[in-house]
Image (cartoon, rainbow, N blue to C red; front, top):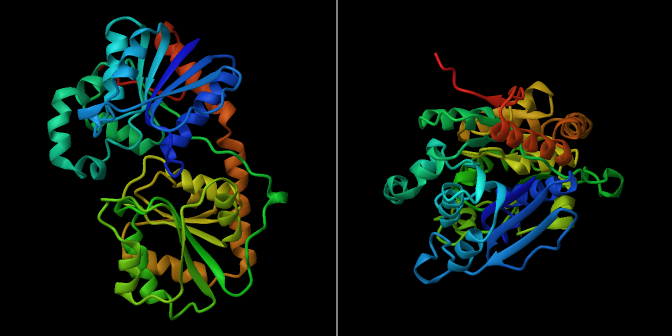
Length: 382
């Protein structure tokens, strides 16, 4: 099977969707498919068995949409079984739809990757109201198969009136070698970690408001904040910390690769108080390092409650204060036990190779018909 993945940008290592697409394509190549990734910006990633990556420059007027004349031309030269679009509100979706319409691809698959949530649709709302009828609705409506990473994203897809089959397949995560990690730091001070893009959607403002109340009560803990600040996102981390007069906050900046893994492993507790997540890859990353998690019900992580690997709470400052108050008072051994249960769950359910096989099975179903795999949601004909 020959697959073309279309992605906006492959240079943002802090972006969960970016990493997920790269790993999915690599794993599909390892499973025997021919997976090609087209994206904007940066340097091409090294080839691996069955996987190749090409990057293209943006073109003049289309920088906001990441339009690339070169990429559009390259797509038109290909003949593939599947074109899988991962770019909402970007020109790559137009190229993918065109490939299907002109029969250079037998199948068009689209992964909204959180872009259809109510929070996401209201962000830059005027721009999306303009783009929706111009091109975005057509990309979704003409897709043969849609992909959701969680039940609530499936609900978002159906809420927009899209009735195609939907493959419900989560993102995967690499499992680090625990023996090579530093282990959760249980000295003084203890570490509560936030690691994500510094963006309003991640709920960092709520966390800082909660920390105003918690900081005086939990003097053996420090809050560590890691992640890149996004220019124009309307959130200045230094200003927000100074405005609240917080003292025990460490700003670590962007962390990637081994440094990011070490940060997860060195924290006793990870917190992601997001307003919206289609998956929340950082939650899986923290659990893979044996670190328990607090996140909100705006993420699809009910598993934290079911597996007793952390806490799944309502969005808002008050629920965050109450949960953190209880969690920060727990003994290190209690937190470590939750983290161990989370690591075990990730190992059983989020391996990339099994998820790549599922996606390939979803493609085959959409191409050839037959019995639907049990992870395919179909709208009833009645």
